[in-house]
Length: 231
Image 1 (tube, rainbow, N blue to C red):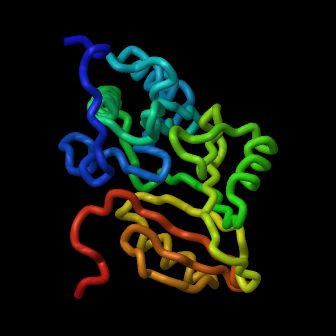
Image 2 (cartoon, rainbow, N blue to C red):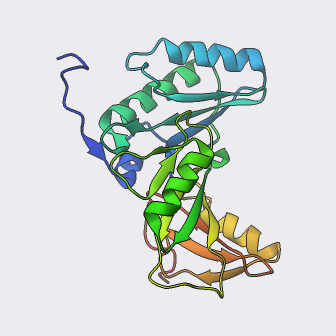
């Protein structure tokens, strides 16, 4: 059966992490990402070339960022939904295999994605403004998410408010990190003068604040293992 006729099966972040051969990858807020430390632009270009020749590559899939020191690869399916599929998992496995063949190591701790969250009373009007200002597009089937059509800039999420909250900021940043890096990132932010506002949704995400009370969230998709708060 060809790739064109195969049924695409959506998978959740935790399921992605449970699949063998995907140890190089971490699911973030914007799909599954891997970072390969090439050490030179030429080595990175060779890896990108090898990736381009793999079955299943094409039509803007995957997203590849080539820099002198390494290559970042992101896999996400953008169709009538915005997420991961079994095809993404298979392509991730193939990409890791070619990286190993070329002797390029992966560093799963080096990936992250950033999202800007806006609290809004009149969601549709606020979304329309930011869509026009940024030149962004609606995320598939979502009236509250905007994404960069070039898949470079941070996504914007619009969170419905029930009433004004003048005592707190209305715009905050969500930082998605690998599930096994979340606690270290939170500890570093607190050591740098921040404070923990809430861990009510951990290990999915934590709410932090800077020394002046501006809030930010640290998210970790697809947590593997027991709840770290459990003794």
